[in-house]
Length: 178
Image (cartoon, rainbow, N blue to C red; front, side, top):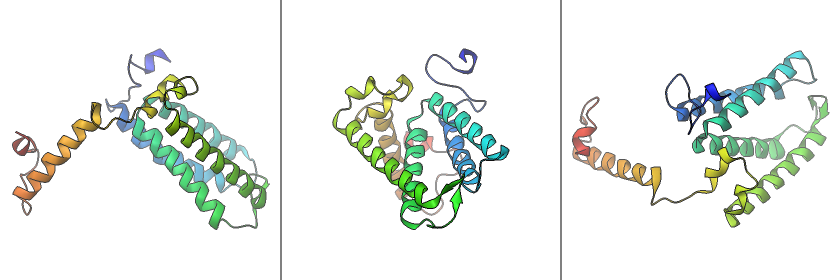
């Protein structure tokens, strides 16, 4: 596993772990949809489960907060959709949709409780979460990458206001930035 990571982040062939996490999130959900479309546990269902585990491990290994938050939000949104608007008849993975809705409701409640606990006790979550997910509790918009993003958005807005019709041209963001 060490050859797959650096001291700080998992690397990808794209050179930036955040890009890898951005591509893993849609792959995770496409594979999830394929898994949920299976009525019974078949070889393909087990293959989808293996792919989901691989995608999840790789996503957590990237340590990219946006990918992990996107995955959590997408899972929560998907569970909400199924819980409120899912077909009550039929079965998925040999489970009736009624039982599947009960499991979905329990997962939603557990996710909400976990989110509230992280929000109320961010320092205590370091002992619960793996070290690669510890940064999820660091929400300071005045430091780190958030401050840089706000600066870039402000510069982009100013640059857009100066030349809103034609812009500054390709690869010329440095002109309004300077």
